[in-house]
Length: 348
Image 1: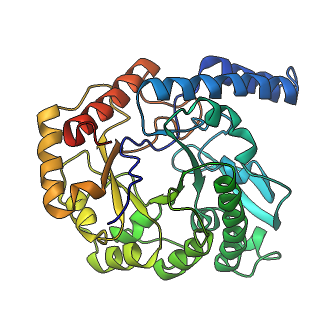
Image 2 (image 1 turned 180 degrees about the vertical axis):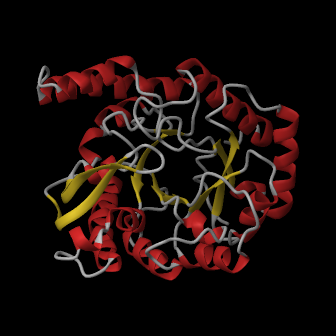
Image 3 (image 1 turned 90 degrees about the vertical axis):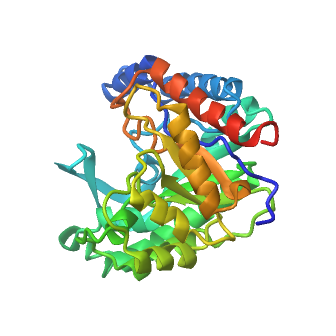
């Protein structure tokens, strides 16, 4: 794969929110802090986390998703036509439903990246977004959404056009790596069932979003699952990885399971793979020798030049609900950077 833009020391985007951000959001919700005051606190925190990521010598720098309640917020917080239902999903996140035409009145997240770009230095500014197929699958309720959209496919296509516009805007403003997240692909890959979209429908929807013209030094990736337990449906994996035209697949690779190996093997030779080599939910650092043995095995399946390393998930996909401390987060990111140096030396 001819690619001089490796972004080899990656992370999923979400980082542990500082106490001052959580406090400011609580005060804002209570009416004690206005929009400008909240934005000022967020701006300062985003600039600081970008500076810290640069000091850690990461290949990418994100906003930590500090401005969002959870990883879906890039859409749910900014696009009209959504409302909270009052329920929660099995992960404890607020449930949302589409109750009207989805419309974006402006940028979704691009306006909040000035601090990231200013502090990135030689690292690549990175942005994260939920995939349109994921949002459609989780927010389409026939009783609530049916008046606006006849099916989750129709909703997904509308969302895909909005997200495609946002990706184009992000790229035009200097973002060099965009990661979409659709963890529901795990249901197809491991035959868990229960999805409102077929695999082919989800691929078609997400393909609309990533169909953008971009410079050579810009990449689009997608994370299909945080864990690879059980037997992989090899037909589903082949259809997904070949059918969805992203540049990078962000895959779990921290447990040593057969499923992890099968997913990596299914990645086409013309795409790269960011392997999640450390678990962001456990404070203890993974054994370096074990990680390097897994990297050696990965290099037998895919050209090491087309591999990057990353934690296996975000550190705080929902604000205020990190499993480890900020100090542990830093140690994990240093661990990823150390492994990258061991694998590629100075050629990062």
